[in-house]
Each structure stands twice: as structure tokens, then as C-alpha cells.
Amino acid sequence: MIEVFYSAHSAFAYIGSKQVQALAKTHGLPLRHRLIHLSPVMEASGSVPFAKRTEAHKEYFFETEMNRWAAHRGVPIVGFRPTHHDADYTIAGCLILATQEAGLDADSLSHGILEIHWRDDADLSDEGVLAALVSSQSMDADVLMAQAKSRRIQDLYAANTLEAIERSVFGSPTYFVSGEMFYGQDRLELIDGLLSSPPK
Image (cartoon, one colour):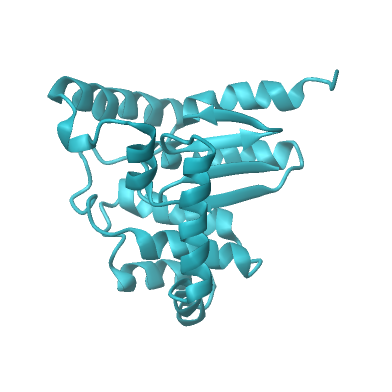
């Protein structure tokens, strides 16, 4: 299994989304989406909050590197930090979890949610926008939205966040494969190498 801990508004989760899905398919492994609330995870790890980072760091990491990797992966991306990036993305994350728990195509919905945020500048707190995306993927938006708001899925989202803290996750996306942690979509080639190596 490949586990991926990430937030529904993560730029680098978006950039690596199709790649990790392809890896899972190539190696015949299930991909488990572990949606989290990113801020408490980063705070628990001692990371510097975005607002307190230097302008040089923000420009390099969230512009230069983001655009380089988007071009490398062939992923379309807006040339700026999305307008509603600081909006509450909980419902978007819980929609992905609800879809996964229902045995539906969480891979497609996950990529779609990340994509509309980073390609189309969509507001991930807008339930109308999310419902339209779900419907466009031939799934029942009313049912999945209700499930996303249920105590069971909300609790799962909270549990994922707590587990991420317990497993020393400090950013999005973070992958776990065979007990090993890999932080960042730029480590996907290393995951491929691990999975391609014959067992010792």
C-alpha cells in the first residue's frame, strides 16, 4: 500500500497527484488517501508558519520550485497563490475521504479537487463548486456531501491529522511505503526505485 498524507489545497500534492496514482497502478498497490488539516501538523513539527517565512523563502518555494515541478510533471498551474487559499478546505478533504470510504473513485476526485484549486483558482470552501465537480464525475453529489459532513467522516479526518502528527509528518504530501516515510512529490522517483527493487 502507498499511503499519502496531504491537505486538499496542497500545491505539491497536486503536482504529484497523477504521478503517485500511476506508481500505485504500475506496482499493483492500493493508494490510500489520508486527508489532513495541515496547520496543526506543521505546528506540531515545529515548522515556521507561512505568514512568518521570509519573502525570499516564499518566493523560491511557492513560486520558483512550484512552477519548475509543475512544468516537469506537465501539470497546468496558476501563476500565483490561489485567491481563496486560506479558506477552510475541510469539506473538500472530507469529500475525498467520503468517496474513498464509499468505494468510489477517490483518485479521480482527489486530483479534480486539487486541480480546480491550482489550475482554476477555485474556492475549496464553496460547496456548490465541489458538488459540481462531484456530479461531473458521475457521482451523487448530495449523498457524498452528506457523508462528508457526517460525524464518522469528520472524525476520520481528525484521526488522520492526529496520526500524521504521531508519525512525524511535517508537510504535504508525505508518503509511506513499506514503513518508510518520503516527504514531498519530488521523492516519487525514489518510491518507484524502492518498489522496483527485488526484495532482499
